[in-house]
Image (tube, rainbow, N blue to C red; front, side, top):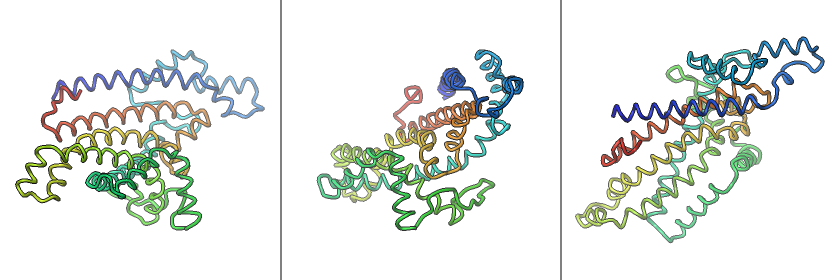
Length: 324
């Protein structure tokens, strides 16, 4: 176990280092934030002073070296626009993004697994065809178009749900959340559903495929011959086996939910990290963009590590060494 953890941590540090180089070089090679941050009629002296104040007069290598040294001390730079630590800006928006991603993940499992089981246990029926056709639409339709259609149907035509914002936020264990107020919940439903649609389709297909592969196996036939009820066979024997690939894929997809929440947050004006990233890109606020990408990469690494642990717990035959 300790060897596995050390090996994964070493790999994670290497990934972070390589990512930081690529991201830093790519972001800092684009545009000049001074063109946006200062007035167009500024004098050359004022312009030069702004460049020195932002540290843009140094070479890219020097700027990266300073960034790495500060990052090792927990400082990912200060926002050019807000003049605040970038990590503070990101952490202040992180609860909203995590809340959206967790609710989308919950919807994916709560809707995807029962629908997949239902379709897998009744192959070739009209129900199976309907569910699988719906999953194809979930894969095929662009995320931004789905969001606009949800707003048009449920906000504009029916007037049931609000289309933008986070609504009233309450506190649970000191953490701000929309889940404890009706206003917050009503604002959360549409963006969470929009973010979850792709993963609902993915879980449906994984579940159905797992059911079709597991039902003909000998241990299922043996359990049925012993007189075990069909409900227990599905809930205990079948579901336990198909959860392994579902947990693996969904765990990795949770990182994607966080990373690709950008489109959903922009469409629904959800005040999360993705909205902050888009605003920072538009303003060439480089420190915030770099800090955001490194935070997301770190979340991906942590999520993958947790998935490996869960994978080994669900199936004792899988060794941690092979999982790495």
